Length: 335
Figure 1: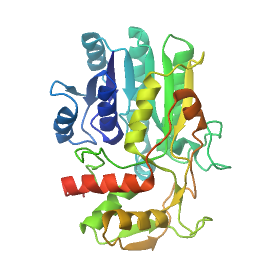
Figure 2: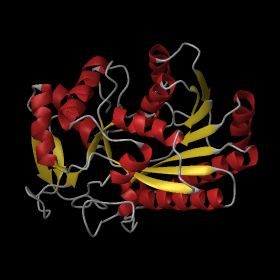
Figure 3: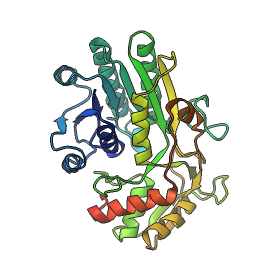
Figure 4: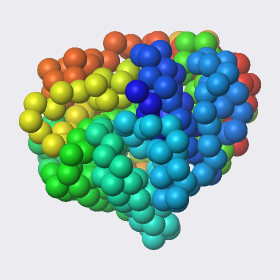
């Protein structure tokens, strides 16, 4: 039982490496380190085993993937490797289509040719765009509002078509907003480039490394005017990937699952919770909305509970406490 994890040095990927190893699976990590730090591998080897196999390479490079599958008897693939910024995808859409779609196509081709039975795809709630009703279910129409979301949806459809025509079974995980870190504080979210996700910026402000947090819009039709999101602990997400690999799809060739908590939190509510978790002031400034952002999104995760036996077990306070613990360990949450 050996799983190939692309993007395994990244935020959710690294936590999934730990969770899969704890579940008794051998893991091979493939990452090109375009958006991950090499020192993460040292931390993973401390958390799992010194023999953890790490290969530097591109998931779109078929010869590399073929060699790994043959040498390590891969029976499942978990595909994280992708560019993942909504604003960046709006500025450079073609790079997103090439990077995200090409890597998924290449992996799927190898999986089908090698008879690899299980493919778990890291998707995103961003595919839903502006949901007409809340909470978001897996049947909510997918209308992505950015090239990033469009590439995720394109990959989902491509994988579902491949599964329908082969012995490969595909689990698509649309997860909401990852927060938190491993309980040890050794791995967490630490972007290479300027932080764009909300929580790393919150942590930098709490550390005193940034003057204030920018809150993008306070005129949404929400309870305090700021956007509402479903924040989910990264360790819960990692456990969701373990459940996905072991899933009985009940006759389906592919299946989509939401992974979230089912609870919506506004940006201002999150800031208040972060002040409590860190014990530090978090000054903020209201600025204009960003292109591609939506007012509100939170998940209905009843399908994941019923069919995968998965449910998020960690609340917002623990997410922020664990994230802060990691921030204190690494001291610098990036630029």
